[in-house]
Image 1 (cartoon, rainbow, N blue to C red):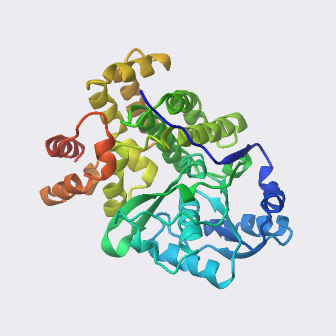
Image 2: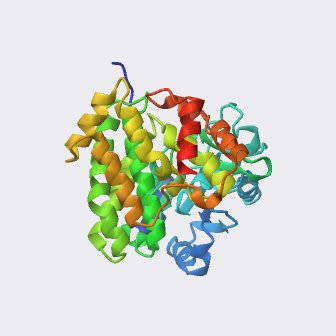
Length: 373
């Protein structure tokens, strides 16, 4: 088995470490920073605090972001980078702000629109501004990946862009920033972490280091996610879920995600189901499917190492966890027509689907969506 491993992101983990942005800017020799943050943080004072604590290193801010960042927002952010001669970028928030900052930090070095590279197969230019990523959710793992997931609402398209230029220079994981996450956001982000771990593990591109990260992250999720959901002030559970999110990011960034993420894109794009919840919707189904495939023994062994009797038992635990946290297990409330189900089948044939260890046919997708509907 031949494999490669690369992880260029320098990680700083611990409470209160958001204050280190000023120090990191000096270490990089960078000035004229741009803060890219979720709109919420401009209203609750956190963005203002971060700018103030940067001691002049951050000179501009951008917060016109959607929960699923649009290509037009990336282009607007990139224009600020050009106009203000920005030297580095700080991303504060969930996957939306980090993914936008990654793409804008690259495209801002060119005269192009991000649309040129979104779902087109044209490789991104690798020249990019240094990025400091500060996640405020325990979910996406975007702070350590080379992936930016963007949406083109005008053309009904959601897809990831992969580029080595998207790796942040630094990731600051400060668990205190996650304490204000509402229970439903905690649940959806946590299920996304589990999807990252499992999909990274069974991906066709899996390899030993990422496998070990996947096992570690999944174990934490099963142990701590429901605790964090029940009690937002459980500091240990919050910190452990931040750890799981980070390490699951390491688990999937090179192997890439598979079928659950492929199916999540049309579910989010067409029906506005939040990303993590959309990934979790099919996760237990694909545990069972993949456990019956050629590499099913790996998945059975994974489940047993986590303390489950077998993969089916692990799938049932995922199902029950979603129920306990009020997440979707079906699509019945959408009253889908045959035409809408056919659209879901067609749009689920995203490249990530072909990274799944078991071939997922149109017939399988059709049956799965009919069961959910």
